[in-house]
Length: 314
Figure 1 (cartoon, rainbow, N blue to C red):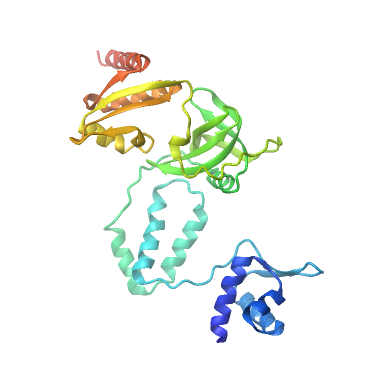
Figure 2: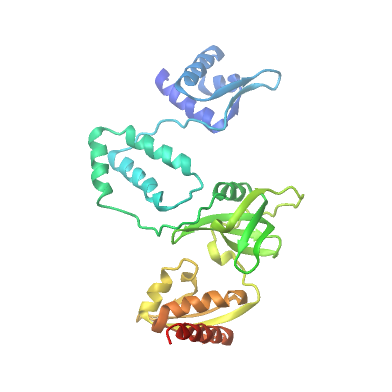
């Protein structure tokens, strides 16, 4: 095997293994230990962060911040990768904010001049519009890490109903919608899945109470549907075609829709009883494009809110 090809395959191998012994690599590549040691020295000089451990159980290890092997992109692939990261710029917070900015800079600076010119021209011709929100979500990285590793966090959450309160949660996923970040998590306070606004999570730190994590490995990117309704009430509403389109734009509401062939639709689903004020505001915003049939509490809440609005303009 040519040395250049061996070095490339060795770089991918050590990145995959993270921890290894020289003899293992020598056997795998069919060369002497001395040759592998020379190759590892060259990889280290190229920037692969290796360090050795002495002793009977020692060997080599790749530090956590690994340097990935080079990947050859076509011009179109490179441009598409650039804009995939560029599209995130509208979000005030990202779980990998510094890393995405660094990746974008590397992509741009290491491209040929004509490709950079093409990207500069495209910046003024394509955009991925997301509403700009003022609230930061500083705990995104901690929430994502806990979701991946199935760990419990102690968070301070500021809800409109209860104010700031500390609780234990085990995140399942985070997702962005309409310019805001949300976290689906198991809440040990409520003994069920809940969806949390990430900008309302003031603090997030590893739990030190000894609470055992749940096995949530089978719960995937489930968004709002993972949240079980608390004190459920039956939401029933008729929607015009325009009302359907506006509801389809809401990530949390789209799964509830039953759309007919003519474009109109209906909602007939259980929702949390505590969300009545939220649904009242939402359906008032739809105006004549929606008619709520139930529950009675929601119809009353809509009438009361409209009466308050009328007072302001009387």
